[in-house]
Length: 111
Image (cartoon, rainbow, N blue to C red):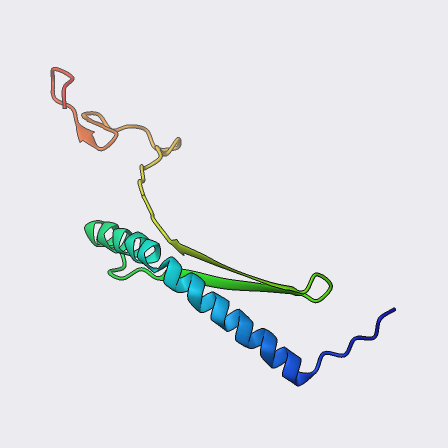
């Protein structure tokens, strides 16, 4: 078994590399993130939801000493939401004469 000791200096080098790669990736995808976020903001405002929904960004890193490699990835997402609701009929409540599913029924049977 190899007893490799990771020093603070080496850990600092890993952190510096991860931060540099993450910054480059964020700049590389900035236009895509902004477009997605802006679309989400516009949709949210049209639906009277939260005016500025969050943009979620995650940064992941894998330091693999055996393959001498540091992999960094970013993921981003904006949440889009659609909502619809209907009332379920109450099986224990009979329909009232002249009212059916919340609509008033006229003599001809039309609402």
